[in-house]
Every structure is written in C-alpha cells, then in structure tokens.
Image (tube, one colour):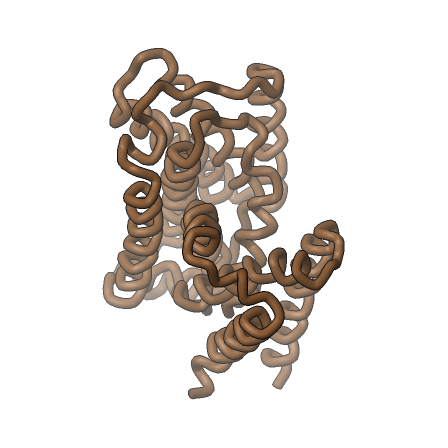
Length: 306
C-alpha cells in the first residue's frame, strides 16, 4: 500500500473533487459537455505520459508545447496542400520524431542540461512557427475533422487512441526490458551502466518517444477543429509536467506510474470547471496548477528525507 500512497492520494482528491462538483455543479456531468472535455484532454494525456517518462529518466522537456504546435501546423499545411490524411499524420509524426531526436542528441550525445536544451528549442520552434505563419489559422480540407466520422464517433476514436496509448506505455514500462531501463537510468546512472544499460541510448530513446507522442497529440488535436491554430500548445508543458508530478512521478527520477499521471491530469482538468462554477476568475487556474506542482515537489522531498 505504501508503494501506491501518492497515487491513492491523487485518486482520493479526484474523488472528493467530483463529489463536490456533483453537489454544487451537477451540470458538470452532462454527457456531451463531459465528453467534449475528455476529448480535448486526450492530446494532453499523450504529452503528460511522454514528459512523465522523461522525468523518470531524470531529465525534463519544456519544449513539448512548441513541438506540439509545430507538428500540428505541419500536418495541417500538408493536408491543406492536398496530401492524404495518412500522409498528413506521417508529417506530424516525422516532425515530432525529428524534434525529439534533436533534443535527445543534444542532451544524451553532448551531455548538455536538458532544461537549457529544451528551453532553447522551445523558443526556436515557437518563434520560427510564429514568423512563418504570422498567427494565421490553417484551414483543413473537408473530411479531416473527426477522421471523417460523426462528431460522437470521432470523439470516441480520439479518446480511444489516447487511452490505448496510455495502456500500451504502462504495460511496456512494467513488462518490457526497454521500459525498465528508463527507471534504472533515472535511479542511478552508474548502477545502470554496470548492469549493461546505456544511459545515453536510453535517454535519447526517451526524448525520441516524447517527440513521437507530441506528434500523435498534435494529430488528435488537429482533427477536433476545421482549423489549426499555429499558437496552439501554449502552456501545455506546464499542464503535462503538473499532471506527471501530481500523479506521483518523482522529480528526482526513477519512480512514477503512468496510471497516476492519468489521475493527476483528471484532477487538474477539474480545477477549471470548479473555479468557473464557484465564480472565481479563470486566471487563477494556472496559479493553482503551479501551487499543486510545488506542493507535490515538497511532499516528494519530505518523503525522501524520511
């Protein structure tokens, strides 16, 4: 039970939040608005899973919001230029993989601090996209939205892809050697090396996976609207990191479960509607998220000292 203490605390807080919403804001549970919120959160779940594994490997990636926007805009421009939908998806994934490979090569290959590398790439990708698009929305061709399906069916596909990816990653990190390598490297580089694990290759792979998930998330975001905003992704890095840390991922690396990340994300998603129904200005949402991150980090530090 002690091994799951953080995750159980998050689930208890989520359950309490849902009870309060059921009492004071029963409209929150209306089917269509609730399904729309979950669908909008599906891309965030993929990014949160990716950044959770990066943190488990004792690194950080704050460029994911910019890479998310770059991959989504690239896929949208490919679709608008007449490429098929699968080709547009491939463009998003290639851009995501390329961005992840650049981060991984600089961090793992040159041993540069990940916070500095990803801060630089965040600015480069965001400003490059801003200069290229000038904030102009990209119109998508007919049949792209919701994968060409009805809205209800498309929402189901988006949520199914996100949850299925979470399931695969959770099983992989638990049962596959490559998944356990991430935890070994995050716990102790030297011990992992002596056990025959390459910390450099493992960290490069983690950043590559992060880029792939950013590309997937961009696709799931793209199909939810007839237009793509090149400024999308702003603040996503904060939400993803908050979901990971609140969900029990240790900022010192080597510990964390993806199911806890899902619970952390759902808890954070309830904050905005709760503030709205309580009559509090939505500007407080980011401040509360930051406070939750700080509280989770402090709790993790106190646990290490004990």
